[in-house]
Image 1 (spheres, rainbow, N blue to C red):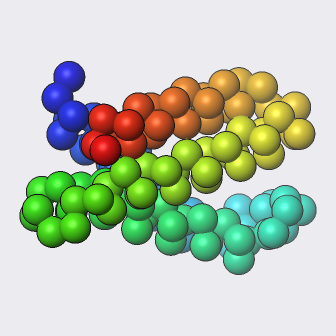
Image 2: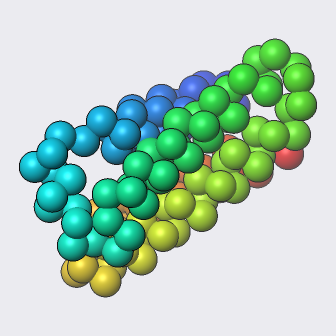
Length: 114
């Protein structure tokens, strides 16, 4: 698998999830009010994911500041670590495993882009 393909797959995943978090309907926002940080925190995470998706693709494809790509991947590792811990605390083991797999993929992309 080409590193560019891996970057694009990871960027697409986080772009879609980030946009989803930014455009949550009111009923879902009310459900998220019980989570740590509530809806404002999840909007921040959505914004961070959208920016990381740009950071995974634009520096490498334009050749401008390509050292930002591994930093974007490192930021996603931190976000996914937090998501895994949140899901483990809520006894959502399947989601925690998924978060861990995405975390490993982000770490892999970050390592390959150094």
